Each structure stands twice: as structure tokens, then as C-alpha cells.
Image (cartoon, rainbow over all chains, first blue to last red; front, side, top):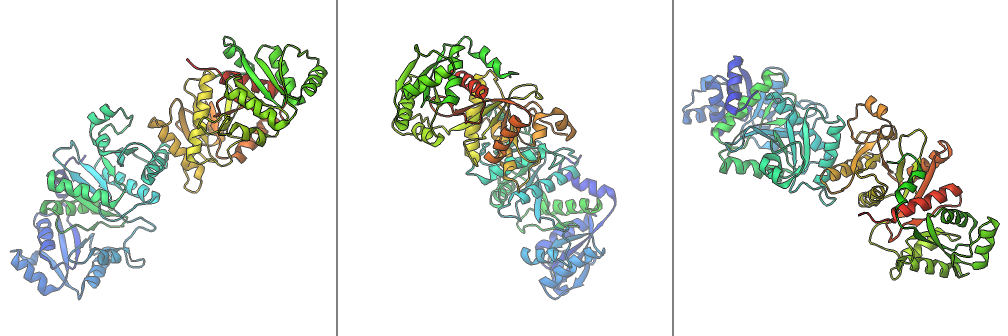
Length: 304
Length: 302
């Protein structure tokens, strides 16, 4: 079982395999810093796609030896994204990573019907493993980045992605808490209605491999004392592995708050793709970026 | 849960005998059942209607009703009003429909000034004795609410659960019926069932155990629930079946009576007093058993 994000890195390093990352529009300082760390530490090899001159210039400014990378010339951010995706699709690389290109342009290449790398019919979403000193284990959260207001089907997909991710970390039957402002079901909260439906679906075996409950607030999901105090009967028992949020706008501030105020680190990945796709915010901590790459490597190694 | 309808008598045995007011009592179908119940000491009747008519019907059945309370009122609407007012002023503890249309009676029941409104939803509760099931099984709502929404389903469950408590079932098992036991977004009954289950788990609906969706076979047969791999406290041991709508309910009701030769008693819940509102096609025995059921419902739990 992977208990910390450093254990994740060690597991990838110990495999002795190096995954190949194709980076789209790679010439910015931020991207090169993250990728070089992964390459230097022996996690991965990288192909940087973009403006060759700018890439070399940025490497120099960062005191990174550009010869550790393969550099491929591309004329703009769109072609760079398409080429990066194509490399993975044709087996020349194992992981796609977003560089300086805007997220929507990058994801357009990923999701392209003909040349993209989506699983057929899959929902595009995002799962993050968050490590915080004040919680006794890793916490998987979804969706902090992609789906603004998930409907029932999207929530089910999000749950299944997060369960799959937790299982990759060795948690056979993760506890998944469906997060709301309270534990009550009311017709005024569509989320609470979705959650009740999902619980029943899990009971009937329509969502598998998990212990699920919701709506629950974060206290009930993650703090046993609150659960004892409030006397809400729930199989989560303050021991959640996964928190599924009702919206992007609730999940995103939650994780950013943890990063900023609670000493959190994370490893997150796009979901619904045939091969690992790394999209991370430029303001993410250096270490978290490294963890994201490690997570992608782990999944590439396991033939995600 | 009881096994036979006649066992309801054991529940009311130690209760004071309740007063039943029969609205528009000059009616062959209901009067004979009321008089038999009176003879058996189950109720004390108050007969409101055309006195001569009442006496003629009673004597045609061979009953002497000279000791019974009769309020002479030949006008149907007025007779109904008198009967309902007797119930709302607590002179009677059960209201029963005689020779009057259901809509006329309900209009009086729902009268804002002197009716029997409690703020609760009125719902129909039917209790079946089926030979092939190991206990009595209640079914709701087969006659009052046409297509109840979630809030109405909650109200219907609450009415029925109170009623089952009075029948001695302290924590009834409620199956929310669907065509399948899986949750299917395209079948709204299965979504409501999931919500009702969760609300029950969260104590938002109390006094019972709710599971659903359950298909009819899973609800009443442990074997078929096992066969489908359903883990449920309710499956195979249902006390109350909640119908998705009146069409399903009504067809089930009638198929139990006609094909399974089930015995049935029914009562309207949610008003200040239980209302016996049987239809002409119900047997005399069903009317008698319904009166008995109403007496059990009218009792106050300690």
C-alpha cells in the first residue's frame, strides 16, 4: 500500500522503468523546472515539444542541461499539443503533459475524436491524492479541476475514477464520502438527491468496490469525534479515503486551502484518458508537481 | 405482524368500544356490516340518514335497532355534514361512508371550518391476508393519491407506519416498489425509492426500516431476493408495500383479491379520525374487517 506521496515516488523509482513524457509547448521556466527534476531523479525521460530556441534559452536560465531532454520543434501551442498527444497514441511516449499551452487548447487535442486519447464514451474528470499532516492518511478528492457542476452520471464516473485511483494505491475497498453541507437529504439540494441515489446504487452493486455514504459534511467524513458527537450512523466513521465534492467550486478551494494553510502536497491526474495526462496549475508547489509526474509514471507503468 | 385479519380483534380486545358514525346510513352494503360489527361488540354505531330507510334495511337483515342511536336526516349533504361534525367534535371516533359518493364525503371531511383536517395528507391503507404470505401485508396507496411525489410518498409512509404501530408492528419493514431492484435514472420510482431509503437511514423518516427499489418478487420472497443477491433487511419480509402510483396499486389490489383470493381491510388515514370508505364492490366481509381495522387505528398508543 502507498501511504505517502514519497512512497509513491519510491515505488516508481524502484521499478527501474523510466516512462517517457511528451510535454506540449514546453518552453516555460515552470514546466522545465518540474520536468527536469523528474528526469534528473530518474523518474522519467522527457520529450519537450515547442520552440527549440526558447526551450534551450529557458534551460540555460534555469541552469538545466538541455541535453537531458529530447527537443522537438513545433510551430505553435496547438500543433505542439497535437504532436504530444500523437506521440502517446503511437507509442513513442507514455505520458502527455501540458506546458505553457492553455488548458482548453491542450484538452482539445487530448479529447479529439480521431486523434485524441480519450477512452470511448468516458467522462473527463480529475482526481487528486492529497497529503496533509493533520489527516491520518492520504485523501483522494474529486473533481477540483474539470467538471463545474457534475450531474448524476458524472458524479458516478467521478466516484469510479477515485475508487480506481485509491485501489491503485492499494486500498482495496476505499471509503468514499459524498460531501455536502449537511447529512440530510432534501429536495432543495439536488446534490443530496444524487448522493442518496448513488448510495443505493452501491448497495445494489451498481457502483462497486467501495464503502460509500452521503450526504456527509467534512466533519462527519473525516473526524470520528464529530461522528460520535452527531450520532449519525455512517459506515465512513470519520475515516474517509475519498471525498467527492458537489462542484468544482467547492472542491477547488478545498484543496487550495489545504495546500496553502495546512501544509498539503498533492498528486493529481486527468481521468478518462487511455494514457496518463498531466495537467497542473502553475502555482502548484514544486514538490506537488513532482508527485504529479510520479503518479503519471506509476499509472503508465501499470498500463492505465 | 398478525397472520389473519380476524386477529385484529385481539388488539382491540382491551380497548373501550369505539363509536362509529355511518354517514347516510340507509345503505344496504355498509349498514349490514356495521350492524354485524355492533352485534359482535366491535363498535357502537351512530346511524345518520333516512330513519325509515335505515329501519327497513335493518329489519330486512333481521336486526333489531331500537337501542341504537339514529339521527334522522333524509338530505344526503346534510346527513354527511352531521356525521363529519360528530367526528370532529369527538362524539364519534370512526367515520364511515354509507349511501353517498366518495367525493361528497371527502369534500365534507376536508371542510376547513368543521371538517377533519389535521394538516396531514389523506391516504388509503389496505391490509391483506394472503394465504401464500407468512403475515398480513399492507399496501398503500391504491385508491387516494394518484401519482404521489416524494413529499407525498413520505406522508403516505408516515401515515401507514403510524397505523402499523397501532397494529402492533413496532418497526415495520417498508418496501418501496419498482419494476426492478436496480436504480435506473429513467424510472423515477427507483430514484424516489433510493431517496426514501437514505432519508430513513438519516432518521428523516422514523419508526420503520425502508428499502427500495425492490421489485415485487424481491419484496415478498426471500428466495428471489437471495437469487438476485440483494442484501436487504426488508426483502422477503415486507410489512408495507409502497406503490409508485395508483395504477400499479389498484391493479395489485384487485389482482390479490380476484386471483389470490386475498381478504382485505382498508381505511383512510390522515384525517382526525379513521375513515372507512369501502366501495360497493367490496364484500360484506371486507367492510366488516375494515371497521375492525378502523377501531384498531382509532386507538391511542401509550
